[in-house]
Length: 252
Image 1 (cartoon, helix red, strand yellow):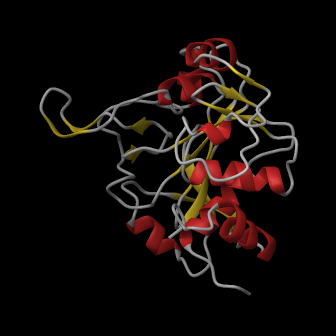
Image 2: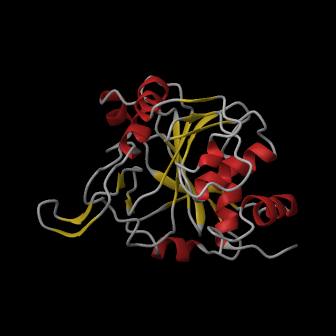
């Protein structure tokens, strides 16, 4: 089988989270590649919505930002950003959102605001952008991030985008829609148990339990039917390398 990179594996697994007919709010980078890979394979009726306001986009090549004109070509409509968030996202019309962040904790809460104390932080990060709205209003969110203890502390320093907060009941009490569905890293695929806590569903080829545990800031649970992550297919690799990202902008 053709060798693949960690990034290509993450793209492949993220694409498999999408179902035909889903409406998804797409970002640039790995989420964009995953969505366009799904649309070209098992989910041809996937509807791509970008934060810039392009609805049901069909980009002919890799967009370099959410404002890239290639997103407008072939789109069903183009609306102001405020309408995209108000009419589509906040009204509950988006099935899937992709998120990342500097920190993710055991309940899927994401920090992209500060590292350290809020009033006197060690690092000040870009902030929410639309991430909090995506986390609060989509039916399910998929988190994609490298896996290290720095990124997976027991508790985030600041909750920018809510996951299951302190558990599934807490999210429901806050009146938030949906919730995080999966966390895909360069080491494993993780999901959430009935209480809203992360557990490992599959380990990537060559990765052990100890490797994942040592890169996580709390005692991680492993599924009773733990399996090895299915690697990307030859078709997926061909699409990623030759059609979606031929210059290796995000995959190299």
